[in-house]
Length: 398
Image (cartoon, rainbow, N blue to C red; front, side):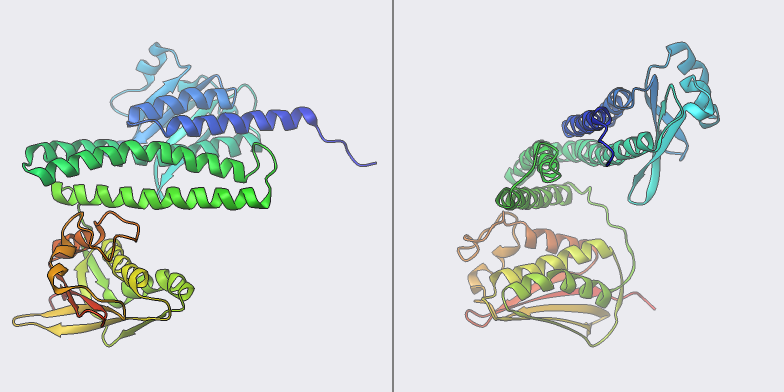
């Protein structure tokens, strides 16, 4: 006789998953580190039926500091959380439990441990308890990073934007604020789609899954547009810092081509890359990749089916120094001479680009990023004969 399912255990598991989903939804509406920390310790304690919870984050000196606590008497918190540190060693005392009743998991962002989430339980933790707390820690790490970037950096950006004058500054400020406010509900929509695809609310038909996939794809496209708005505002405000390191240009170009290869194949296009040299520059690899993905992506977008797109990497000898040169050439319809300067202006949309999705920021952001790395982005085109975008960046000095 087969074993009967434990209905009580299944119901408990379902209740915990629902609580985890509710916490995820609550985190999408938080706008500061303090709000995230408070939501996590309060809701996290309820998730695991814990008597106490604490979240610790890395300070400027790298040491972990308590940012929020739940279920811990104020007297104990004040006595143990001392300015000279040592809180980690006294974590069981802080939470009021022995070591075998304490469960803690790290908060990891970008492969780096940035904090700790710990709870005090009435019984020794189980594997299920550890899984739940780890899942909550993953959600917390993402929410903390979004709050840091979307809150603290946004405040600095807006303070600089307020000091700027003119219509462009006002537009960037308004769009940056709008982008931030839209991001949270979009995150909630994506989260609900995940939950539905996992059949948390019941079984799905194949057609329903296809519709959910379209919803998520549309949401991600809108998020990419918001990211462009935020990037443009940061660049105009002067708060888009680059990580300048020696990078191999051909390697970054190959990564961009590989990313767009499936899209080109979907339109039966020929997308090729040649590297006549292996130039090294001082630049930000992620930002250079962003620029190349935008240029190659535009070529794929505007080149007709079965067209050709080529990417070449070489060295260019200027008047007084040598440059790394990346050229993206397509067989598309071309760009009118009268528009070749305007296409690099923020929010400019030509008549040819009107049917395509976008807000007219890709090329403006790309030129600004290339110029921040000490280079230049140019275009050559003839109507009916395609277009060629060229990036030139100074080589590393010998």
